[in-house]
Image 1: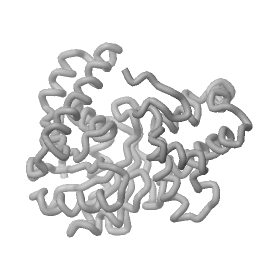
Image 2: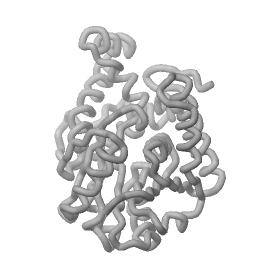
Image 3: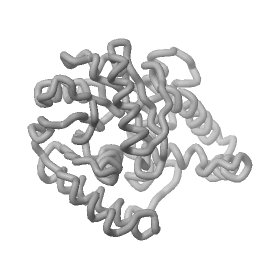
Image 4: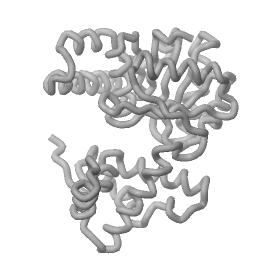
Length: 287
């Protein structure tokens, strides 16, 4: 399928970023949220991101204006009916995501249309089985911030048709200009299966008092040339998301290195989720 009309469900950081890169690529893009108020907030999120790109010299103002003109935000899922590809980007919760896929299966009219999930840890096959078109369901795991990071993991399930994989890889590389790595449908896929144990190890180091959060991050940034230390990266990802991925990895593999440390669980319980709440392993200006 030649994807020209894209839908995105969920207008948080991930969903708004995906909608932005699709609109910047010249594709007609519908971004759907739970209601009109949330849809308006999602549009503002995209507009602010485009404005930042213009301010940093990464995007011409006319290109930003054109991208925004191609974006339709809505609180009505029915506006996704004519899409060639719909990408789900809602909260990392299996029940919520399955409900979205069941609804999309009924709403999206073209039986050849593709449905994709941005899940970072849940089985793609389980989400596909919430529909009557599991062969057209695939994982497309983008990375935050989506307009900046060039990678997308393509994750077919046991049910995904080879033609679906070809179509989405063509879309990612040719339409969006991003690089692809293909992963099997296992918790964490390629990147998080490697990344999350590293983040959890950094949490345990800070938790034990072996080193401060600042020193852990400085060590990896200055000693290993990482652009961001592990605890600052965990804050950026969202500590609740890190816990969700870790728990999914542990459930699947039963390896102790995947178990989230008590400190991380307590921070999430306290609402200290990282950058978006202003406090995690570091503090952030919410202005």
